[in-house]
Length: 355
Image (tube, rainbow, N blue to C red):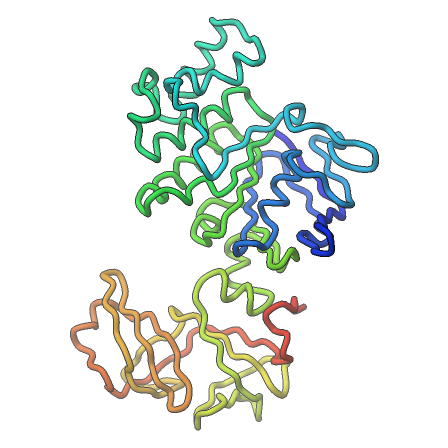
């Protein structure tokens, strides 16, 4: 187990700032996800924690010991970490047992101890029955579990994972998410996980650090990030969202381009962005806040994904799949708003963190 402290960490390549003044305290046994689009700086940040990159400025400490800072740089092999990469990176000429045992052999651990620890880890990653198989005889998910076992066998203080599931198919990704979280809980190990996949972040994390263009947009639990996004970028990246321009007038928001408005009891005035999650808009028989016509419907089995024309603007609505057969294109319907977010429309709404 391990605690991590990052204070005012930056990374600059030539004139490009990849990470801009990142600070965080990661608790012992916590599962942290660095989430964001490709190129946002999350992998660079992970590699600075690992010791594969040096920060331009700032300090990184593990368990109270500075590993990167003024005049101090501890190499990766002396930081007590395990790391799993996007590519499986298993040795093709070694069987499962030898792949997992490799870090212990480098440390010159006794054969008896290697056997005990490797078998224990193979049980944890559900590979004991495959210990004599070669990587070419394994599925992608099994190879990734080999890489995970190899990272864990030396009992690291800290486990770092860099998009480890991105090369797997959808069903394998889903099962591996649960397996990694189960292993983390069982070992009570501190994990820093990098992904661009919001579902991975939401299902696995204690806290999420959502990053865009090297700047942390919001830090919080999955529930906080989803229900209380600090800006439009966060609302759009985590989940689905409709963004409608509008104006606050007499306790209502008039939706730009339409003749419709919705009630508003907040404190903002003037031009705003009305943000509606598709699942928070319900199709009702009467008493709706908005009226519209059905433009498109897509039956996805577990949901009915609709686009509704409001007469000058459109919204996406996730409707009950059981009503799909009873709805028609161009049908007039009413919509009830169950929850909304409202942001000031100042032209910088996607990157400005609101207080």
